[in-house]
Image (tube, rainbow, N blue to C red; front, side, top):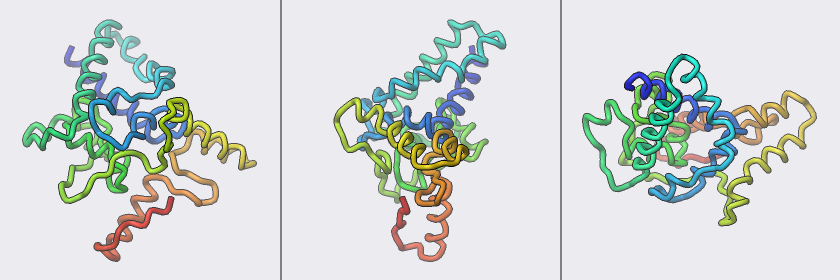
Length: 223
């Protein structure tokens, strides 16, 4: 059971990270992040399209021998842990934070502050974030702003579910080169063929440069 839960957590990390780094998957996952609130309601705000591809990330577990029912139970436990993380009322938890993904860590994940973007993808454990370079400590000096940079600005559920897919389609239509079309679909969010928009990594490099030049200057977001 412990091995299965660890395998589930490892899989969840890469599933979650892929949702942030592959634009067509981000189009489904953005529903969860597009709320500017961070509470238990946000936890159940999920895109329907995620259900179409999530099983493909986990299929390797039954293939190597974990019983399907065991995998399902581990997924349920993971989901409950993720659900309760969506709270601003639980402070830092000391030693526990050295091992487990906690509420303040998940606040980092849901923030649109440039230094926090695409950080803390972990499920139960934070070791995979630390291992693969996506770990970010919660900084009490930073005024956290929740939500996404390009919000749907609508309460219509259809718009919330589909707005990023529409943006992808618009980007695909405006370019002629096939490789550019593929990048707008499968590349990182923010990628552009002409540099008119920037990916998270590009924004964070620019942020670092600006802070080195003038630590007091507010980040001038290019997108």
